Length: 189
Image (cartoon, rainbow, N blue to C red):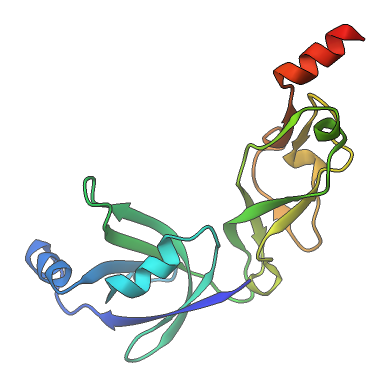
């Protein structure tokens, strides 16, 4: 999985007033969870946009004045009107312990159902997996070549080396929907 480098400054004071001052200076307050004590940082708003507003998932190298932490993006909050990032939560992981993260799904192949007039639909764009950080892929490729009209691919049908799928087994990943044209062609037969 790709690593995104982010420069952070340690927050010396917490509270509403200092948070407001940070936001006025185009900085976003952040919290890192995971080990014994939470760590409070702030990052540049422009640097954070490349991490938040993307379909990709990254491991983050959070560099502060004293240390570099390996973290993943856990949660973020937006302003309800301007869509600016107000706050970010990171989770600190350890290289020898599994990380639970959502990984994007990429559909490959030309399915039989699409050839028959159906429409391929990606239902779950992200699938939650558990693996060591070194084993995490950038994307999960799902082959749809044998998928017929009205058929679905569920999480239970997928398997990837060195990955454990955490989503419920009955969750649908992709399906081929019947279109009006395909229904009409089936009715004529």
